[in-house]
Image (tube, rainbow, N blue to C red; front, side, top):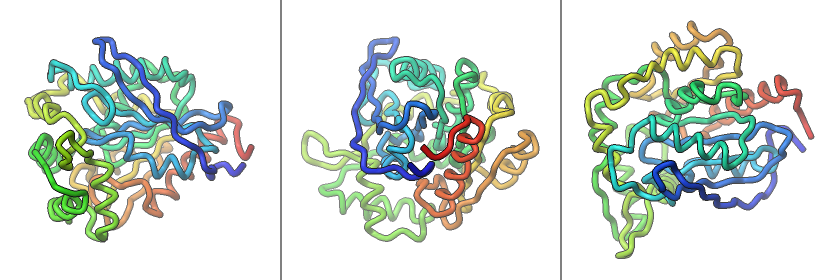
Length: 300
């Protein structure tokens, strides 16, 4: 089996319980038990669906586990919106790591998922085999943070996925300027669901915006210290060339503070790359090859 190429593998839905009694969901694509798994953490309003293309490409060669954070996708919504905070997310992910038997894993985190990936060094540093940070760093650019806070929790309701795709294209044209309608339709299907009334709506609890918009919602988190705790691991920083969240200056500082950091810029996209772009595929595969080299793996 080629180290980076999988074969047709059916996804499996998995479930587990949070410490406060929520039924949470993850999606798994099986792969060799001898290799580290790939643990995929989505962005603030996103779901496991964001990683389906990556999983289809790598499953069979790698075990891929993609998470629906609480209040997203197939995971339950809590009664208390103030549980939508990084500490609770990390506790939920810790439970998943135990339930899914992820003794050794590479974590792939997009946006907020990347911040959570860095914070896993607190309790799971020994289990980490590598880290991929997709368009996120220890500092978030002010313009990008303002945009995210303004957009999260915004309503949306459309009669069809095509209507949703056209509206999302108008809202986000500067992020993916090269996308065509088919790309936006795929984006809409990843971001939205069909409601009980038959309308197309966002696939997350809009109340996730409540704590995210509070000043100091992540107070006490030292992201630079967490990032530097990755020293000695294969780590990749991906940045969208048009990103308003991860600046080139911060990515350069990351490289200066973490020896051996791999960096890549994905041309023509903003926040965040889909991981299907050629530059992203090349960089991800190179990082996974480095993981295998350090793990004693290779073609199997």
